[in-house]
Image (tube, rainbow, N blue to C red; front, side, top):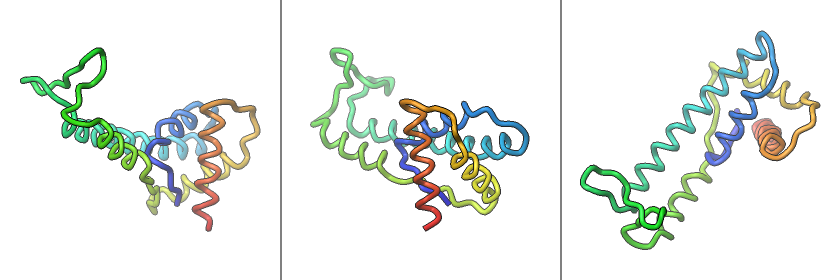
Length: 136
């Protein structure tokens, strides 16, 4: 089991896609990537639904922009608060069908010894912490 915040799903899946792996390791990595990408897609859909509640739309249901920014019905702060709550929620990857894939991924992440920077370094750190939390 691992827990990853919704806001980190995209960066983690992109990092995992970049890894140069073969065979079973690659297959297991992609099983996890697909689940993370699907969850990230759902998150995007949920964010759009949230936007619909707070942003003005035209007769076609398209968002209205004012000075290249979304035109909010009321105060944008409430939307931002709701959005932050949504993005700070944790996605728990706890599927018995993915146990072996998660175990393989944990080994890959813990044994990774190439230089990382910026988003990749952050994504690697997020995964290391997620596996450590899952082991507790």
